[in-house]
Length: 152
Image 1 (cartoon, rainbow, N blue to C red):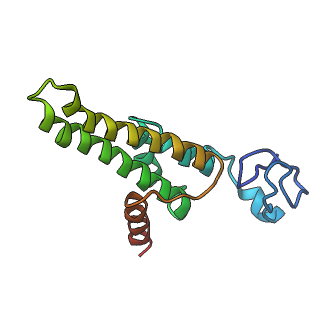
Image 2: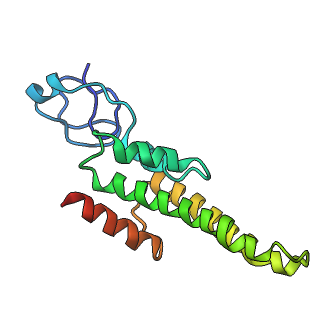
């Protein structure tokens, strides 16, 4: 039985559209050569935003042949990587600047930045799971540039 190239659900051999996502199905000749899907593009995009470990999924997505020409998923992979880099910059650069003092307000800036990045991760998980495109300020522009450089 063939699978939908958009969402990965099973479709009938004569179906022109997927009953689940409404995606147009390939011709019967192309469907015969199609391989069963692994992870869908939507799920790959969501995995790139899992806090603290999404960078692994992002690297896998960027290295995989399956998503090489899917600029939407590659954008999410780059944006997820850049969010993780922002987390590391707060953790390794900004936080050590405040290590010398135990006064609670000195620790407030790194903690606030960590919270903002965590909220951005959760927000992007929701947006990616609904297939809604969203570009974060600054990081989204960097991800756009990275995807466009990969195309050339």
